[in-house]
Length: 291
Ligand SMILES: Nc1nc2c(ncn2[C@@H]2O[C@H](COP(=O)(O)OP(=O)(O)OP(=O)(O)O)[C@@H](O)[C@H]2O)c(=O)[nH]1
Ligand SMILES: [Mg+2]
Image 1 (cartoon, protein in one colour):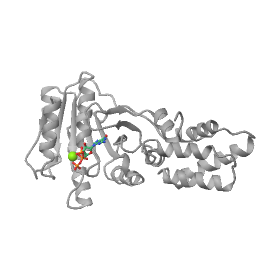
Image 2 (image 1 turned 180 degrees about the vertical axis):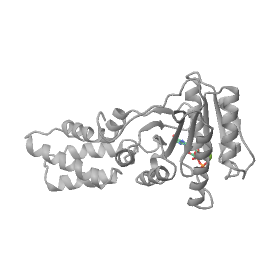
Image 3 (image 1 turned 90 degrees about the horizontal axis):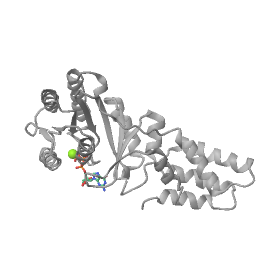
C-alpha cells in the first residue's frame, strides 16, 4: 500500500511518449492523490512546459520538478516548549483519527526530552474515553486530571492548568471529544475549552492547538482542517496512520489553503511511533523519489 501513489507517478513518468494523454493522466493521478484540482493543473502544466523546452526529460528530472513545486506548499514545524512555563497542547480532531493515542506518543516524546507532562481528560462525552486516557497515563507515567463522564470539559482544563502551575509541570496534553450529539455542539464545546485555556495561560506562546488527521481519510483532511481552523483556530497538523496509507496528499492542500505547518507523523500504535514531520522525506515518498 505504502508508496503506491509515488510508484504510479514514477511509472507514468517512465512513459516515452509525452502526448496529451500523458498530461491528462498525470493530472488525474494528482487529483486522485488528494492534491486538489488547482495544484494538479499547476503541476501538470509545469511538467508539460519542461517536456517541451528540453528535449530530454528523464523520470528523475520530472520527479524533482514536481517535488520543487510542492515544496513551497508544505512546511514542517516542531513545537518546542516555552521553558519555565506551563505549556498547553490542545489535541483536536474528528472521532477515531487517533487523538488519544497521539497524546500518549507526545507524552513520551516530551518526557524523553526531560519534561514533566500531565494529561487532561477533556473528552467527557464518550463513556470509555476517560478510562482510555487513564490507561495511557499509567503506562507513560503521567499524572492525569479527570472529572466524571458527562461533566464540563472546560472545567477539566481549568483544573489541569492550575494543577500544572502548582506542581511545575511543563506540558499539559488535553484530550478532546471527536463527536457529540451534533457538529455544532462539538465545536461550541471546543470553543469554550479554548476560551478557558486562554484565560488561564501565562502567555499565548505557551498554548498550541493541533488538529489530528488520519492519513487514510484522503481529501476529507482538508475539509476537517477548514472546519476546525475556522471554529477554533489551529497552529499545526499531526498526521496519523501514515503506516497504513502513505497518501497524505491533503497536507499539500492544507498547507496551501490554510498555511498550516505539519508537526508530527504517527507511524503505528506504539508510543515510540511518532516522528517529527520531514518535508523532504514526505515529498520523496509522495512523488516516488528513491523508490
Ligand atoms: N496504524 C496506526 N494506528 C493508529 C495510529 N494512531 C492511532 N491509531 C489507532 O487508531 C485507533 C483510534 O485511535 P484513538 O487514539 O482512540 O482515536 P481518537 O481520535 O482518540 O478516537 P475518539 O476518542 O473515539 O474520537 C486506535 O485503534 C489506535 O491504535 C497510527 O499512527 N497508526
Ligand atoms: Mg479519544
